[in-house]
Length: 257
Image 1 (spheres, one colour):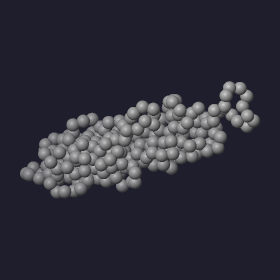
Image 2 (cartoon, rainbow, N blue to C red):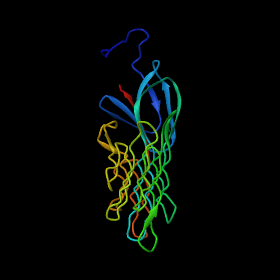
Image 3 (cartoon, rainbow, N blue to C red):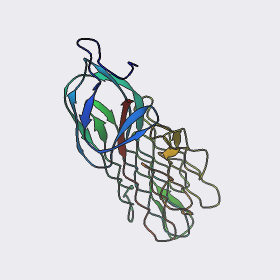
Image 4 (cartoon, rainbow, N blue to C red):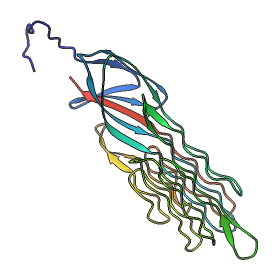
């Protein structure tokens, strides 16, 4: 850090000038938070600038259920974190919406959309599957959807398996959980679903405060969509549709001043 007064030849006090998203400062960093699709533009920089990022996709919708059973919870949006070096230029940012909850037979909750920062893509969560009663004694459905985090599978008697995270380092798998009429939870950005509960989110401080990113949706219809951003929707039960997933977010920060 140079002291007040004239600077050495060729040195500027202005390091990086960038625009895009909601801009705010925290100790040691400037943060650009995108809650909607836009552009991150570096207008001035002394060469390449190291940017930290968190890219979170949209959470998926939970599954429909009837007959007193529960559908599967939606998978949370996939989450990618890291750093990249960019120079002056414009870099596209996409922020995805969450998926709608599923309704009636053969309809998974809708997957979440994909979020991106330039060529860094986080994939939407997989939808939770339905649970349908055959009117006699059996429940059926289908496997939870695959995605950035896997969707949970609705209560059934057939052993369908659950949705999986099919993208490396983005999140966890859903689960099939057929006890007491409950469905399986959706995978979270922080890990696999353990039971009817959705998988854990990632607790991060990139914005300067603690935020949960990507809670998996629950398979017992007992709560709102996952805590924090990018959460999967909770399942439906007893002739109800699943809850909708939560939108994603893109956060970029760099040392400042």
